[in-house]
Amino acid sequence: MAGPRRGTKPKTNKHKHPTKQNSSESIKMQENVAIAVIIIVLFLLLAIAGFAIHRMKNRVDYGKKPAVDEESGEEAG
Image (tube, rainbow, N blue to C red):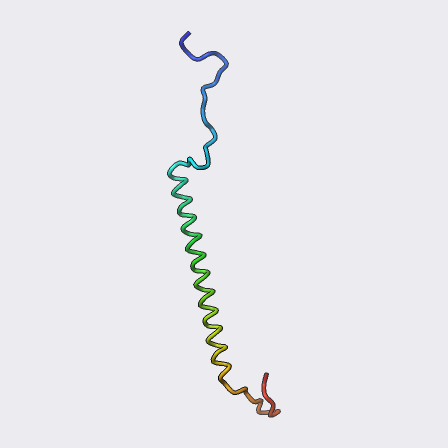
């Protein structure tokens, strides 16, 4: 009786350790992280550009004289 015993199953590891992923899962995870980083950087660039436009617009508005409403003669506000 050199073969396996009756009633026993060969040991197979069904559960993978989270740090021991196969190469395709690892590459997919790296792609997801890269896409997330690109989206975050683009969002930050848009926020900085919007803030810069806001600051330039407000800086220019402070130098102007207030507009006068022609009908009432009062300052528009």
